[in-house]
Length: 273
Image (cartoon, rainbow, N blue to C red):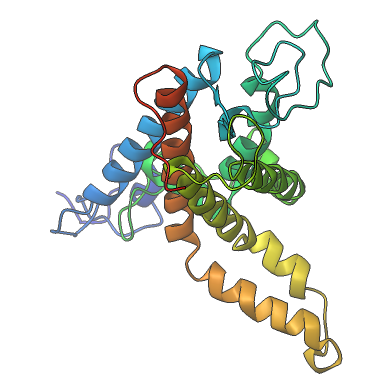
């Protein structure tokens, strides 16, 4: 005769012998799965698109715009070699797409970002899929083992992300020049570049690591008024970290796709002056 205390046959997660013998995995009646499903769909769509563009190795420059996926262009074979910004650090031996050289840094920054960890842990690994819904895994080791221990590299990726944001700011300034390098140009692409770099900076500065770097290890804010003001500013951005993460993800994709359309000859850049 059942006593109500027998362990679930699965004996994992919430069904371990030390937990109450409740047969249901959760008691939520709402559509809790919509949020992780939507997150997974959005991230998967961006992964598919960015992978295609990174390996396309074409249509990433249309004067004066260079795709944020390919900037800075570090290989000799870059299409922007004689007409746009590049550093040519890799010479002629690099045979793969120039985007692969640089994308590892913003990708590493986003993959180790606290919000994106939550997003793909829930969306893809169901760890856990939602509040009050137990994860299906038998054990939990957190981020103490390989490969998740690599999440601790987030602060170092933040430093690289600052440099990338600086390069994108330089590209944005150059977007105010025309194809003949004359200043005073402003097209629809310029507007997109300005919006994108603003969102990139906002997302980068809203990072938890940035907040700690700016205001961490201080015992008395009153003795460090400049850092205190900076910490409060970053804290306000940090409160919108999720929104900025998605907005900057969309903006960088839209900006890249716009450059692709211009470079492939789909239409000409509408100019305001």
